[in-house]
Length: 378
Image (tube, rainbow, N blue to C red; front, top):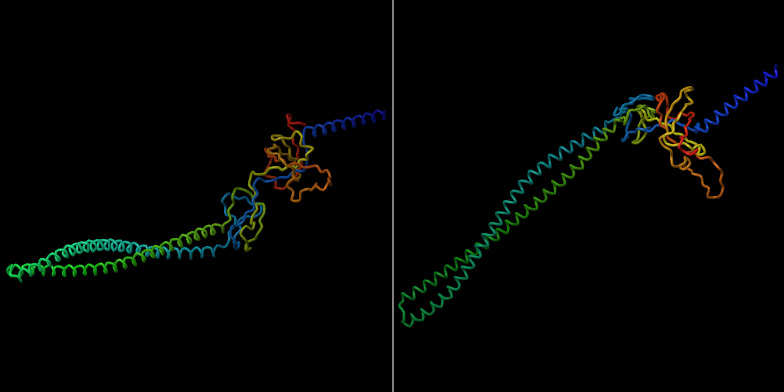
């Protein structure tokens, strides 16, 4: 009887072993199984101020939820506000000076323009008058030469008694009138020359006024450039003032706080680490000899080490085209001829579709099963 019981027990143990072995073999035939799995986040950001200063307020702490655009921390902005006030005062002063110079420039331009027009008209009048006088002088000179010859001829005739005195006197008076007219024309020509000299002096004054206008233009232009530079500085100070407030870039959870109230921080120094909500995924480092049959779309079962009995499901969304060792800081060098076989691991990205994802934390590990696709080579 005892022999039969022992034999039955032995057979039962063999059956159990066979069933367990079959299930073990079938599971590894249908699934790629590994414990090299880690919870990751698509967006985990270290937030920092873009300016330096003293931290005067921290609104959030480890584990707190944040909303996009919510203010998380503040720097002391006293210096930035004072600088902004000084720049604004300088701008107002420069704009007032530029306005006054612009008014003076417009007045000077109008006066100079009128002076130039008047000088041009006067110059043209003088030139025309001089031409007319010169033409008259030329004509008078010809008449004088003819009158002088007539006078000599009539004087000779008068002396010979061939003409009366009255006729001679008439020719003589005519010549003298031409002489007087010649003197008058020469005097007029001298006046014209004086007027021309005066017009040159006026033109010189206009030139000086023109130079003054150009000087005013350069001053206005220089002030405008200075105002542009100050406006750029003011805009930068406005931004720096905004940068004294640290805002959340997205909805998420505070994973870490790096500083305390009262700390002096540099621009770019981490203040908070924020993890975006609903951005968790699994990173699987699957051994290369288990990769057969695994493809994008493969179903996944994940059991985290931290929560026994809780199961998550998901699917493969990405398989890396290179092994994890390819991107190591110190890659293996096999060029010397020495080589030790090491199973490479291929990074696989898994998106979770079912399960209490809120309980997971970045960095957690566990065990994962990836179902091999039917149409993939096994």
